Figure 1: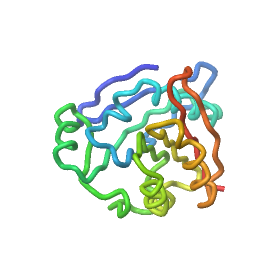
Figure 2: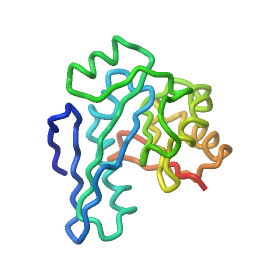
Figure 3: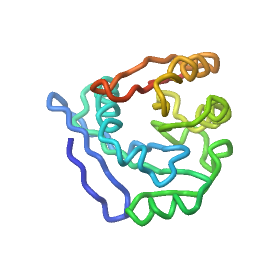
Length: 175
């Protein structure tokens, strides 16, 4: 995986697929309840999980570039992310200011409660593109089954991924 900082203060991550023939650009990733952005940007594991899933979804694609927008209600946390060159916006994940179908991928790292996960599902579904997916990483693996059930009850097909035995992720795609 190659990473580079772009001139517009966004982090562009290039995912290379050696057997490919086509380049896909401008995938948009939304990281909800982002805080300072350390959940997405600070965990190489999340990049690896995205790389694995994007590779499985990418037929005949050489590389995928994606830009990440982090949103949170906490202005101080957002400013920490902005100071590190991250694209951040202050907004509530339960009422996102984005158009329908704006994002290829939505992520949420370390949500503290199942109530929060339930409360953001309508907006996650609304802003996801039809072929997009939601990557959720609970703050404790004890919440995997509970969050997975909530997602399945709300129209997602889920799969649990494990990253080198350290973190578990729920990969969710609309049915």
